[in-house]
Length: 383
Image (cartoon, rainbow, N blue to C red):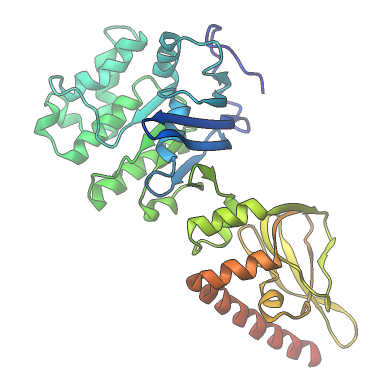
């Protein structure tokens, strides 16, 4: 993808939905204080595509808000490159240029709203248009009112922020963030101070923006919200956790997910290619990143039959690893290439032994698959 300079006219290719909206390459962020140098982000690589609704989660101090500040240009990376909407926002760019670019390309929603207290909600929404010099002067009030209507605040347009509820203040902040029709909306804990009903209203708005082609990136502590996003990115101790690991084993602690991420290996299998032959010892735990896997048995006439299909976010190999036995079936790629993430046996067993909740969840899956295997064998015998 061609990367432009902020000094050149910006090209907003909203039609290129397959192109990335955000690219982070080797992002390192260090802070220096009286105690010495503290590294918050440790070589983060991340790509977010146009039209995605992405949540970023992590414990306090994990680096998620710092990561968001790299994307918005509020803070500077110590090392690495940040490309947003096709533009490198740090290389050879002044603070003034970046600020003006941000006003036209980003909508930012903060946890504590940041509305100006002496301006009405309507005037707060108009403010970014004035700063970015977008829309005719006479058109700005009309557009601001349309945005307030969109978020359900048309009857409160001429009230000061202090005279409306916290939920209404956040809705006004979202209207303000969309004032210049940015392609990207970034939200840092947007529902952190809201009740459940108000939080649901916020997420519905974000879903509506995404449906109309916007990209939304949201930092949140609320696990109930991550199920409503396209992707859930977890950051732990300044490092990104592999998304396949977190999707396949959501019960794991973040530190264990990070351990798996560091030892994981990616492999690609072509359509129909055998991944695990039957009656062979299994040395890895497999998690599916893309594609579909077929689990295949042979009947007494040596004819194949598929007992199950596994897809993205599912895993296999756990039965053999936990029982220290050989493969109970042939496992092969379906009719499309399959990309998997694999974990060595020793690492898998060690982490599972340290995570009873995950061990219990996997144990239930193991038992179900063994039961399914017996049923399938009985059907094959009675053919």
